[in-house]
Image 1 (cartoon, rainbow, N blue to C red):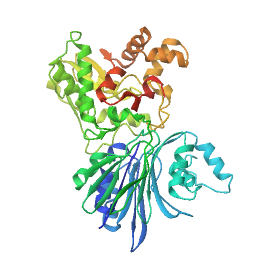
Image 2 (cartoon, rainbow, N blue to C red):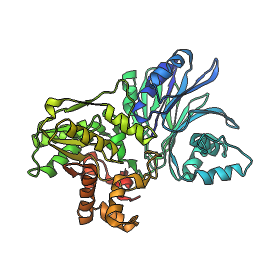
Image 3 (spheres, rainbow, N blue to C red):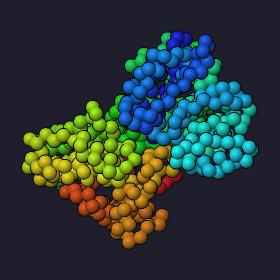
Image 4 (cartoon, one colour):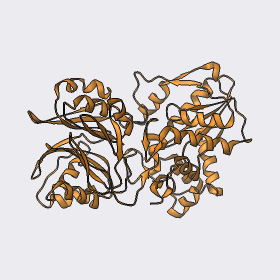
Length: 470
């Protein structure tokens, strides 16, 4: 995924920028960057690989050496950014969050005008560099940003640092968030609204879909008003968002708690377990909601040792994911041995980690391990955000189960049948996944219950990864 932060201050903004970016570290683990502008020294920029060390460690030197009144930065899983560009617009820095499905076509059209791009190690073009090139096709930033939003198939939210202020553009369907914070000496833009609270900012507002705004140390203002249609990514509440995050007025922690309540309601009178626990960390709120609704004791039969282990979701190689997922888990045997456990995770993607966790609990003495999830089965690869570039649709455990049941790669109509929680095919798929991953029982959160858990207008939510609907 990725996240970004920008600050405009009457004084030096680097302290706020450093910690504002750091508060986005849950959104990525590979690349990070900062770019600042000062009237005295102009632009300064730094990018580091953060795979083996956290953002704060890698950027400690820059937090002391960089100075400026304006700055932007990011946590990114793929592209090195922000990038610094010199063009007919002058010099500017840009960072992005999103996904460009038609990058090849756009790149080819720009190259035909005698432009060039630097290839990354894998042969791809840095999508942030491509966004800058698109913007440079027009006479000013506003027209350039609007043009980018118009021609990009996918989604694209943008921060642009100039010598006069910082532009922010939320993608045209609002699939990812941008909020504005304010304090006495300036303003900020942030992907995560909680990221600026401890820095002394108070919330101003969230940008609407397609809105373009600008901040400087004195003011914030809208340059292009928001569109009427929104399709914000529901997976933000399910997985990506930090518990203290809030999008469109719905707080992540509360949504996950609500999901747990719905799961308990469907289990009422159907299951006998000794305790309920969340797969740390994003399953915890689900488990508390389940426990409070059902009366089943909430406990922590194992803890995750994180001080020296990176997140196991991100490593590229499956062997590394398996190893890290297993080595991070520390059992509390008194809460496992001979017990019937109900574990709640936010989702099941490939199933690798959850299978490892289940086997770990059986090896530690559990008599039963029942699994519940905070969202429906993932059946469609995301077209709009970089959920994981290493995850093809065929790697999704739901798709693999369907292929086993059907004996072939399913067509669209067949997938829609499996997505219906009231169908026999859906239950057959769930039973197959349960068998493949060695659970005692398995139930998924229903999509209608997930939408109710979020509590905003369903028409504003993107649910493509579960039901394939645009």
